[in-house]
Length: 308
Ligand SMILES: Nc1ncnc2c1ncn2[C@@H]1O[C@H](COP(=O)(O)OP(=O)(O)OP(=O)(O)O)[C@@H](O)[C@H]1O
Ligand SMILES: [Mg+2]
Image: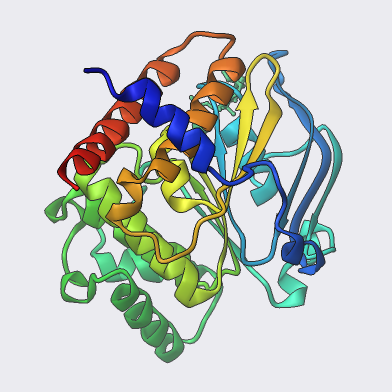
């Protein structure tokens, strides 16, 4: 018997109001306010039409959407890695150029670990501090701290090619944490990893987010990763890139593997799958992947329900 229709109906009925805003967050400081920023590349590609994105201090927000919808473009503009064509960007209420003067920092984590292959983990993690002219003793202390945070203390002397993909990504994250950022921008950081490793790093990231009081903007193609991690998921559509939906994942932390097999998780995933389907114009690989993910989550929920 196919339990899916009934389970999805139940999930929809038990889901919280996904569009409601968290009233308490309204009064918190805005870490990021991007107002009408847009981008056309020199070759004429209209990558992003004016978008408005606000991220509250301490929030975990994920950008989700089909390939080419401008997720990386938007993230890079927030990071100051790419010039905007129009609009304004404020980080903690001030222009990005004033961020450093305010004592705040941001860090960017790319999909590829981008480690120097000839340098050991310690030297790789230390690089941003050397570029910033941080004194040697202080740099050593911060590198030790960052390596401990990502569980790589024992691998400080290893070369990158001696590490697994997951460990290389941990080193990359340590290199971003070593500058003590308040804002962490992550562009599909775990996209190239196997599912088990990705889930482990997702959990570790949530712990870092909590313990370090970070504000995170995370990019992924994966609906389940977005639901698992985020307080809010911002959906984007392509041609031109734009924001089409904004969904609050109103679930408590810490989030464990058990959350992945709940009816509430399935309801959020279904909500985002429908949204992604619309954002993809009713087709697309991401949509197919989403369908598999939801079938999987629902199947486990069904199995649990049958066993109860
Ligand atoms: N340097 C560039 N020059 C010209 N066009 C670009 C450039 N970088 C990106 N684009 C185009 O801009 C659009 C948005 O690209 P972007 O990389 O931001 O999308 P994305 O959502 O991050 O995609 P993906 O999920 O594949 O990473 C796409 O059409 C892309 O081909
Ligand atoms: Mg991208």
